[in-house]
Image (tube, rainbow, N blue to C red; front, side, top):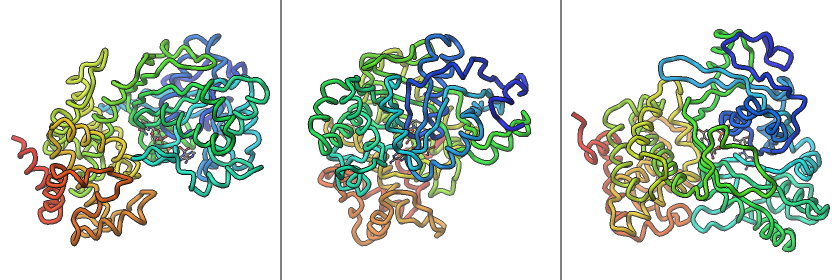
Length: 494
Ligand code: NAD
């Protein structure tokens, strides 16, 4: 049975469907980047609210927006399925909690009709604009924090009279119209995995506005809010087996469902210009300061993914749970978390860190998630500088140990050569691939070549404590392989 509003009533009882009146929902949130994560996380929280307190939540329906050409497929699926989709939460024992999410009520594809997107954003009902546009979507240098005004799409959007095509162009055009019409600015809520995601959103959107119209930038600075948030739920790319399994289990045809782990967490700062849904009623931790939560997550969960993925890939693993279930790599992970990441954290109110780390190993070991090592290796140049380099920096400053994190960076450098330990090519997915791969290949002659890139690594290359550990690991990767290096670093598990 094809998923649509008309088929909801005919789905089996073990698929939890929205019973609320979707036609009575108005859009309060416009979301850029409707991918797997948004659909497993924020849209799920709004759906929870719609189910539990429809009256107050019904002003907070979501309008999805896609700006990249690749989002056309999402537009087609959303149109065909009345914006409904299935969320399957996969437990380690093979059982699924399956629900249909109804909180997205519209979807606009900006390349087809940018004006419709701008007017939706400028509409008085739009009070929050949220984003999961990946780390690269913020268009800033990880080391300097500067907005990249040289990006050709950004330059086109900055031209006088341009029809906007980027998130920055669309949002700032809408803010200009709101200013002109005497409306307050919406809140811009980043839900991407970036340290200080709200601060980054504030600085990048304001930087774009300043280049376009300094008075608009001042108005944004004076009136707009950009709450920081920490978001967590492992959501792999949807694979065809999820689509097939839904058809087998429930006779449900969904062209683009999303599968995720059962665990979910969202810590969100309470700073909103025009109100917000009662997120706390849906299990969100609404806090004054999100910093301790995000440091915990970025340095334990996200950086740990990087600690696993390159050594795992080089050792022949392709699925994350297989790497984590290997006692050697689990030990490497725990030692990285305990010895190098945890000392750089602040106390996290309400969280037992030992328990959090144990749960992380369990989550990474869940065989049902089938998260791929390749996904974790993709776009490393957006990840390592934001998640791991700050850990190394903090430990260099405090005199703490860096051997394990330096080895993780070296494992990326080895992986970026684009050939695995069996001599097979690696499909490097990275926006900087064309510059990174040749540099990585030159490191047999010049072993520090990779980390000399100051845009990615800042001044780590100037610190002998870092370079000694890095060179030891890189030399080992070349001569003895990833497994041997990890064994030398953490010892062979009993
Ligand atoms: P996805 O590939 O399924 O979706 C990404 C979306 O962002 C797509 O709609 C894409 O078109 C859009 N996008 C990418 N670059 C853009 C740009 N420059 N401008 C505008 N839109 C752009 O990925 P996902 O799994 O949904 O993850 C998205 C982000 O969510 C991650 O990068 C991360 O910051 C955050 N996140 C993901 C997970 C996860 O497990 N997948 C967990 C926590 C946080």
